[in-house]
Image 1: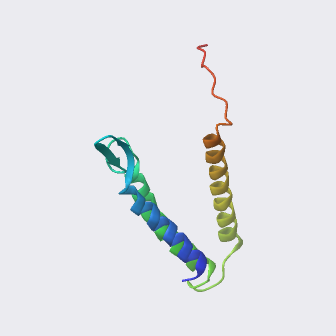
Image 2: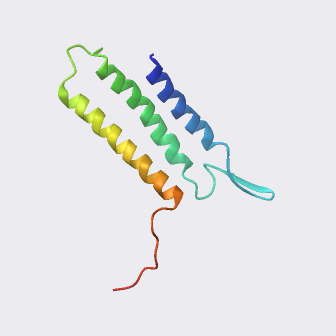
Length: 107
């Protein structure tokens, strides 16, 4: 397992572990990622899918399945990385509050 694979695997496992930590607390009540309206179950489900995906992508990229990697695999990997980067940029922009939210008017 190379460093990229180990880093991806560690990040996914940490995200899954974080689901079981406290997400919200108010006085004596605290909620973790699987209680209340939290989306912890989605983190677990997609984390497990991502773990399988990391291994599959690395096996395709390393040509361990026999043959050689075609341009389609590399295009898919680059497009996926681009989508992930855009999603991260949108999340950062939203967290910084630079998106305008105005009152909605009915037509």
